[in-house]
Structure formats: structure tokens, C-alpha cells
Image (tube, rainbow, N blue to C red; front, side, top):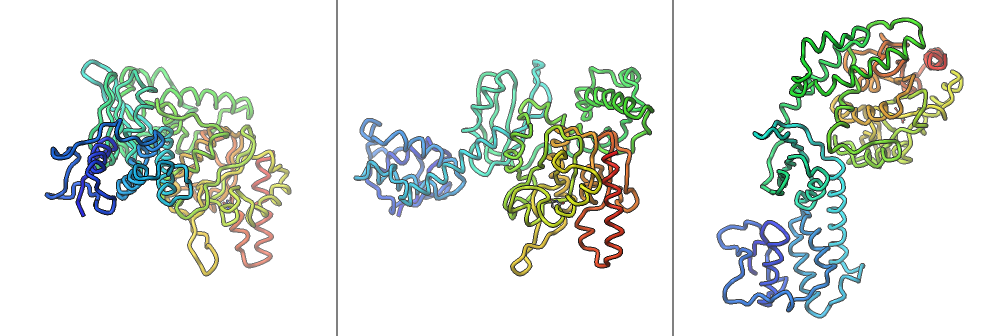
Length: 477
Ligand code: URA
């Protein structure tokens, strides 16, 4: 058995594999090991063996295409698998790749598929952030991404084409890519998100800035005098300013129109602006309800996806007047991929009908989009999402809010309240109509229908149900 280093990528493996084929080394005689120490061979051809020229070694183009993708897979056994296929192709099985049921072919195709999917994801989810300027004044953008496979080189040409006029870098633990307007350069990966601390700082700033922002007291001129526009670009909260100004005018107008009075100052709640900020990124994919579910299903922002059947997106018209936010999908919702189709959903349907709200005209969704559960015998027992999971999923709820832009927002229970309004809101204390014009003209906070299902005493349950219907009726007024 010979220990062979395949080198870092497809090109190096290919050179080495060609030499080994010329030597007649069988797959079972090779141990493919990366950086396997003093005694492993490298991809440099050995002088005493002739490397066959490409004309002498003919393999179908489909093999090269397949091998290029498989080579990006994170599985260390990929090199042995590729050599095995290469050996068989060149030793009496030239049509091997046409036999889809062959275990080697099947495995390679599966790996190639994983890699292609991941490349697609990278194209869709890389987000550049401004990270300084070059000495010549050109802005520099950086993105952090954590791919499962070694796909940076394969994915980078897409970004070069799309963002040809901007200097950018994509940093990942599996390699980095840099583009300076002329040349694409790849380097080793970096271990940690370089933005980690800055990010937290920026996030804190943005949250702070959004929460102190009061549309009823907006004085653009004074703001600009204190913070001249030319400095805005270097401030973490700067991305918020334009849209806060624009949005507040819009919302103020609408509120004055509908209520005939100036609204009360808003409570410090968060804005949708971190979302709008994100969608201004040059790499941001545009979202609407036709592609929302696809993007959502690829979400790996927390670990809940691992145990869930699917991510459950919201459901309802994109221009719904009312949006209803629950906690997370339950067992039934997880299996059907639709919100509020289980017992809590049935109760909600009944209460909505009694409150005069037509469910089919509302947009129903959840604060957390994957079912969190723990096994209990044969059942999957619901578990409450924690703050980290709520925060991780908030971006999706914000996107839905931004797309649907409902006039009335109904928050069912503590998780929906935590996600939309931040900490410090209590359903018991703040229940009913609450003042959060940043989210919708009318925001109603009430209990979650599962709470009613859990009440053991009939009389209490009936009374609570009537209160719930009364809360929902605030949406119909
Ligand atoms: N509970 C929720 O909060 N949402 C659902 O979709 C179902 C049950």
C-alpha cells in the first residue's frame, strides 16, 4: 500500500492520478492521504515513470465534469472513489458512467449533487459588507460564509462576473477568494468570522439606533446638522437612516390619515431596518413570496432544521391586510409544511371566524419556522424555542413583514412578541392593542391558542376563549 497525497484540489489530484495510472498502480494499492507526513508522495510526477499525455489517456468528458464536482466534497474518501472510477473506466469499463445503479457511480453522483447544491446556496446567500477602502479610494467589500464543502473556487467566478466592478473578498474556513477588479486570488481558509465582534457591535448600534428613533419626532435637518451626511457611510447605523426617514414619513401619513391624530410616541421596539439594510447589500437576492419558501428551506442559521421535516413558511395573500404570527410549527404543521393546520390552528380558525376575521384573507406565519421537538415514546413533544433560535429566525419574519406590509399585525403569545418587539414585553401585562407603528398601523398582542387548549378547567377555558375572540376582533374594527 502506498500513501499518496492528492494535493489540495482537482488539478493536483488529476496529475497524480495520471502518473499512478501510468505506473499501473491499482486502487487497492493506494492510500489517499492529505498531508500524511514524511513518507507520503506528492502530486509531482516521479522521473522514472512516463506520465501519459492526455491523448494516451482518454476518459469521457462526463467523468471530468463529475470529478471536478466530487473533488470539492468534504469527504476524504472522494479521492479514492475518483481513482477507483478512473481505473475502471480505463480498464475495460469505458461505459461505466452510464450505469446509474453502479455503487461507485451512484456515490459519486450523490456527492456531486451535494456540491452543486452548496454552490447554488453560496451564490444565493453570500452577503457582502463594506469593509473599508483601498488606498485608491475604491470601496472594499467582504463576506463571511461557512460552506460544508470545498466550493470557494468553484463558486467564485459567479461573483467575479456579477460584481466585476467592485473589490471583494469572500472569507470561509474552507478557503478564501479575493477579487481586485483584475484577478481572482485564492488563499487558505480562515477559522473564525472576522466580523464577529464588529458585527455584534454593529448590531447593538443598529438596535439602539432603531429603538430610539421616534417617527413622530423626526427632524431630518437637525439630524443632518448633528451628523453630516458625508460621515454616515462609516457609521454602523448609517444604513438605517435613509429608510427610517422615508419610512417614518410614509407611516406617519398613513396614521394621520386613518386616525386623524398624531400617534403616541412609539415604545422602543426594533425596526425592520436590519432587513432593509441587508437587502441593500450588493449580494442580496431579492425576495418575494414566490421564492421565500425555497430560501427559507435552505436556512441553517440555527440547528432546528436538523430534526425538522421542513421549514414551514407563512401562508396567505402577499397583500393581506392582516398578518398573524404564531410561535413555531407543531407536529402536523411540520409534516404538512403549512402553518396552523393542527389542533391549535383549528381553534384559531374558530376564534377568527367568531371575531369576524376571514382566515383566507390573512397571512399566517410563525416566529420560528422549524418545529422544535424532543422524543417522548412514539411522539414528538413540542419544545419552546429559545431566544437564540427566535433571534436566528427573526430575519425570516422580518422579510415576510416587509413583503406583506400588513396594516394589522396579530402576535400570538410570547415567542411572537419576543421576535417582533424584543425583550421586556409581557403577554399578560401588555395584552390587547399595543403601540408599535414601526411594525403595522395596528398591532394586537394576545395569547397563543395552545395556551387555551392546555387550560384544565372548563369554565376558565371558556372565559379565556371569549377574551381571545375579543382580542382578535380588534383586528376587524
Ligand atoms: N402553533 C403555532 O404557533 N404555529 C403553528 O403553525 C401551529 C401551532
